[in-house]
Amino acid sequence: MQGKMVEKEELLAMLSEIYDQLEELENVLESNLSGLRQDWYYEQSEKIEACESRLEVIEEDMTAISSEAGSIESAKRSARMKLELGF
Image (tube, rainbow, N blue to C red):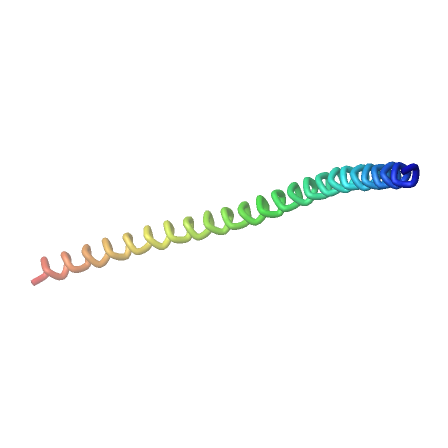
């Protein structure tokens, strides 16, 4: 009977130690994952900003091309009108 009591106490002590170690591991993992989350968020923010900058450049180029195309088209219309008036 005395031996069983000692075994139970030893088992409870070991389980308690395991529980403490698991809690410590959980805290370490949480802090590491938190740091990784922040790093990932920062990395993704930089990628999004880079994409945004590229899109702005493309939009500006497209606007310039559109305005040039409009200028060329109006010049062609003007030239056609002059030719028609000449006949």
